[in-house]
Length: 220
Image (spheres, rainbow, N blue to C red):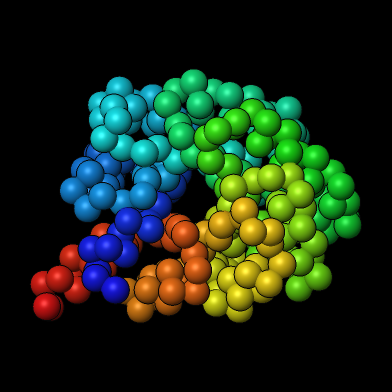
């Protein structure tokens, strides 16, 4: 695959707590230049990015991030504000405590509630695979599918581990036909990026893809 084409799959990400406007602006400028799928940014920067870049940028943000244990009403409020500020895509974190307690009905209801709020905008569901058993991952594939979310996503990048090919292949077996996959966390090479795309990921979340591709193009 052409290196530049890979960037069309990338949610170009800057979610560090100490990210300043110069960091966000650099991210957005790179996203415009390289035509990444989106920028994934903290909620506090959505309006400024939207006001600065308008329709040049597809804005993704995070909700219930990174631990997932905000109550559903708080997550809904976050979604409403993010959409009002100009976001087009929401990456929510499931309530991992509910998952570990085996309350998948509650998880599914929460995802469905957030999908109702996002409407025709994209909802990605972060399940944080590093904390889960295989049985829990499979149950979450079903919950995400039943709740009609648009994507299942591996990781926040803030947990104890990131995306693995094993988890992506497991997702492929158990998600419904309308659910897409996003790998995130630990994508540190062009080879990783290409492998996840070839495995069927419609999106890859990473902060390093543009730098990696730039280096690859210089080598070529």
